[in-house]
Amino acid sequence: MSSIHPNSATATSADWAFKQMFKLEADCRSPVPATQVQAVGQFPKLFDQFPFPTLVGSAFLKLGDLFRSSSNALRFHIAQVFEASSKHLPQITHTDELLKRVLAVLYSNDPIARVLALRLIGNGSIVFAKYPETQHGVLLRFQSTHPLEIAAAVQTTQSMLKYSPEFLKVVWETVITKAGDTHMLDSARTQLIRSLEHAAPNLQLSVVLYDHCRTWMSHPESSIVVQNATMATWKAIIQPHNRLRVEDADFVSCYIQHELASTRRAALALIYKWDPADQSSDISAEDEVDAIRDRLVSFVRREYGKVTGSIDIHCIRLALAVLARIEAQGEYPGTPECWELAEAYSSWSLKAYCGLVSEQASVLDFMQTELSKSAMDSDQGNDSSTQVKAGDKVGHLDRLDRKYRQLVSGALLATSIAKVLNQKEYIEAASDILD
Image 1: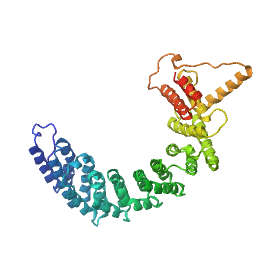
Image 2: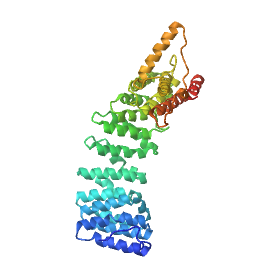
Image 3: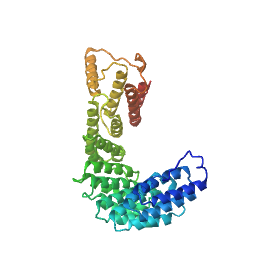
Image 4: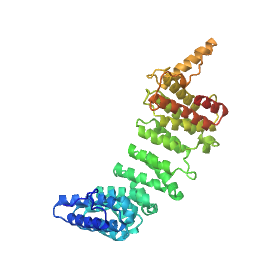
C-alpha cells in the first residue's frame, strides 16, 4: 500500500511525483475495495504537493477512466476528489477528453451512477459548465422520475450557473417550471429558486422572474422555506429598471411580524429595496404606504419590548430606514416616528452603558418611563433633562462588551436615520449623540 509523505526527502522531483501517481493508479485497481478508496483519497494530497499541469492533467484523466469503469461506491469517492481538488482543474488541457469519460456514466442505465456523474460534474463546474454537451446532459436529467437524480440535477445546475451564466438561458423554462412545482421537495425548490438569482443582470429574464416570485410567494402551498428563498431571489433581481411595486411591498410587509426570525429578516431585506419615492405622487397608493408604515412601527415597538440581548438590531435598522424614507416623502405631523424610535434606542443604550437604566428594562419600558417623566416635568414647569455622556461611566468596559456594542449601534442607528430624513435639526441631534 502506497501513501504520500510530504516531508520525505525523496519527494522533491517530478519523476518521483509521476511514480507516486502510477502507484496510486495501481492501488485504485486493486481487488480490495478498502485499498481502492484509500488510494483515491491520496490524489488531493498529490495535487497539492505537486501541482504540475502535466501531472494534474494526466491524473484526472486516469480518475476519469476509473470513474467510467468502477463501482458506484468508488465513483462516490472519485467525485469527492473533484470537489477537494477543484482549484487544480483549470490546469487540465484535455478537458473534453475527461468530459467524455464522465458523460459515458451520465447516460448509463443506472440512476445511482447518473446521480454520481451529476455530482462530479457539479464539483467540476469550473471547467465543465461551458460545454454544451454538459448543459444538455444536465437538462435531460430533469425529466427523470428518480427523486435523487432530480435533486442532483438541481444541485449541479446551481453550481454550473456560477461559472456559466449563459447556461441559465438553456435551463430557464425547465427551472421556472420545476421551481413552481409544489410537489417537488422543498430543498430542491429552494435551490432552484436561489439559482435564479443569476437572472439579475438580464433585464428581460428579471422582469419575467419578478412576476413568478410574486406568484410563488402568494401560493397557498408554498412553505416558509420556499417563501424565504423566493424573497431572497426577489431581492436580488430588484434593479433600477425592475423596481418593487407598492402593492408588492405592502404584501411582503405582512411577513415582518412573522414568528420566524429568518422570515422577518428576508421580508425586511426585500422591503429595504423598495423606494417610497416612486409612489410619492400616486394618491391611490397612500393607503398601502400607510399600512406599510404602521406595520414597520409595530414591528420596531415589538422588538423594543424584548429583553436586553434579544433585540434584532439588524432588523430594526432595516425597518427604521424604510420608515424614514416613507416619512421623508410624505407629510406626517410632528416629529417623525422613525426619529423618535431611533433616538429612544440611542438614549436607552447610552444610559444602559452608564448604569442609569436597569439591564432588565426593555427599550419600550424606557420610552414609556421617559414619556411619563417628560409629562410630569412639563406639568410642574421643570426641566429635569440632563445630558449624559458615555465618559460619565465609572470604571472600564471592554469594547467587546455587549453594552458597548449597544451604545455604538444606537449612535449609528440615529445617525443613519438623520441622514435619510436629511433635515438640519435631526442631523444636528445625531451629531450631539456622537459627541
